[in-house]
Each structure stands twice: as C-alpha cells, then as structure tokens.
Image 1: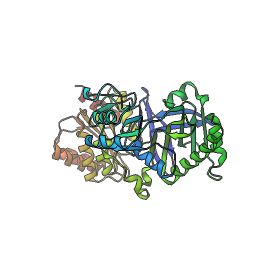
Image 2 (image 1 turned 90 degrees about the horizontal axis):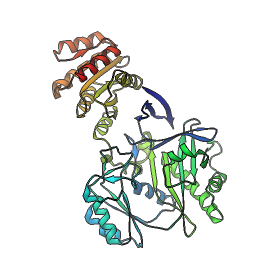
Image 3 (image 1 turned 30 degrees about the vertical axis):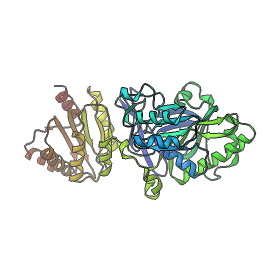
Image 4 (image 1 turned 90 degrees about the vertical axis):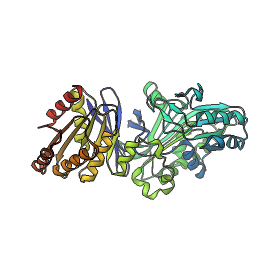
Length: 451
C-alpha cells in the first residue's frame, strides 16, 4: 500500500514523497537528500532519501561554494584521472591526507567496493604520505562503491577528492532545510555530528535543535548564538559560529538551495570551526538563473532512463519491480502502483506523461520503459481529461511498431476520445490486452506476468 507522506514546498511545489508499507520511500519529480518535519519546534520526521532527478552536486563542488562565500574549509584537490593523483596529493602539505570518493550518495566511509583491486577500505580513507594518498585515489577511480544509499549495484567512482587532514576535538551537525509546515527556511543542529542524523532523531530527538527563520524579520545574530550555545561552543567560537550561520544562510538563499548540510562541522584542536563535509541540493526550477550551479551538473550520477525522461519532460522514477507503468497524472500513477501491489506484483517505475503529451512524447516514454531489463509486462492506464486517449493510442501503436513488443501489454483507456483511442488500438492488430477499468487492467497484467 502506498500513501502520501508529505509535500515539500519552496517557491513552487518541488516534489512529493510517498511511502509504502515496507517503508520504502520514493520521490516524485525532484530530489532533496534530506527531508524533515517539525512539530512544536522538534524534528518528528527525518528521512534520508536517495537520489533521483535533481540538481545535486559533489562534495568538492559544494566546498567550492563554501570557499567562495568565506566559510572555513580545508584545502583540497580533485582527481579525475589516475595519473593526476600523485601531482594533486603533492600539492597538499600533509602530514595527513584524506581521500574521498565523489558520488551522489551518503555513507561513503562505511561503504565497500565491489572490485577487490580497490582494497577493503571504504570510500573515505586516510594516508600519511602523498604517495600513499595517490595510490589510494588510483585504487578508487573507476571502481564501484556500494553504500546504504546506492543500493546493491553501487555507483562507479569517477572523481576522487584529496584533502588536507586535521586534528578533531569535537564533531557537530548543522543543516539548513525547508520546513514544509511553515514554508520557511529552518536550521537543524546537533552535538552529535559525523553520524546518521536520522538515527539521532529517532533515538535521542532531544539532542537536536531545530527552528525556522521568520522571513519578515530575517536572520539575526541571536539565531547563530542559539546554535552556538546548543553545540556547547565558548568564547570566540560563538562569534565564529554566528558568522558561519550568516554565511551559510546567505549561500542558501542566493543559490536557491533546498538543502545545505554540514556533517560534520568540527571544532579543531586549535579551537576553530571547520566545515569538514558538505552536501548541497538545489531547486531545479531555479537553475535558469543559477549558471554556476548548473555548470556543476554531473549527468553520470543519474539513472540513464531518468535522464532521458527529463529531456522529454517526463516524470520518471525507476523502481525495483517487474511491471512497467505509463500513466497520466501523478495521483493516478500512484493509484496504479498501489493496485499492482494489491494484486501481487511490484511496479517497475513511476511514469507520468503529463496532460499535454504528444505522440512523440508517448513513444519516448514507451522506449524508456522497455529499456528496463526488469520489466516483464507493461500497463498503460490513461484517463483522458486534458490528455486525449487517441493521442496515447497513436503513441503506443507507433512505439510498438518501432521497437517491437516482447512483453505483455495491457491498455486501459477512459475519458476524452476514448472510442477513437480504442479503435486505433483494435485496428492496429497488435497483441494488446484491453481492460475495462483499473482493477481489470491490474488483474490482467499481473496474471500475464505471473503466467
């Protein structure tokens, strides 16, 4: 059973998060790495959601923004090719080097590589010489890193960041997010940094400070002091924290961020604050005015099918099931996934062709669904309001003729020009199973797939 969990709203509705009984979380349209819900100024929901189609950037790119805005970060070098590793490591002084795999997923340090040649260590490693740092970087490049957020297939490491090391006195958590309940920018902070904040929220929520900023009065110094006191900072550290909070808030608003997470924010042995790791996500609706952010877009981090769908303005999310879905409207698409589950199977995707789909757009949607090797059957479920059933029918017929049909196909049409749509399907002489309603369609496609 799939139910609506919540909307996240910034300048527009950016995405919808839904959850199944198995507590698998899906995101429709856009993506933000962390989402949360406040109640009485306390975090009552905090979900880590893995990537789909949005404007995420790598850690080293996020740190470049931090550096540009004057936030304290360590010096580092990005390595794209193995032969660059030695030179990059040699440009840093040491005596400690940190080597970090750059992928759009969390949990890199606790991750493992599929290839034995990468070694047994995770995606974040320490080295005590430039030569060892270069060697570790070379081992990571081109290998596949598996973390709790990548799934069992993992992600190939195409970039490695080599950074100076430092001595850590304390680790904290600091993030700026969008509070969906108030439609305001909110801060989340905790003394428990360097670990999963979701776990902290679940087990010890009292250790998390969270508050929203009133847009009328804006950010003030007391917001930074409130965070500093919550983190247990003293003396000049409080002033550093106030300045950092102001800097991060300015970056968040000017770059149209949806999430800016520093985990961990550290206090060094010398008593200064440093942003040791950073994750940033952006409102993709605002990318037309953010060329600097858009320049950091790494298409290799996206699912090829989702990337192809985005080019045709299709809302597509790949899932793990066996029945491909092509539907118009997000609500009907979720109901379709629901009923597939009810009849004993699993959806292979969420795909909303929208209300203004053309024959060409429907054809591309069909191609994307059939490119998924896990798809054993396809259910087309269209309720024609703005979308005309005859346009869908023409697209389906053209797609089947162009790329062939190797799996069962069930089509349910209802609404505008439904008779014309059904006639097009029937006259095509294609091996298409017609359905009278949604229940009938789900029953037929599951039966066809299960044999």
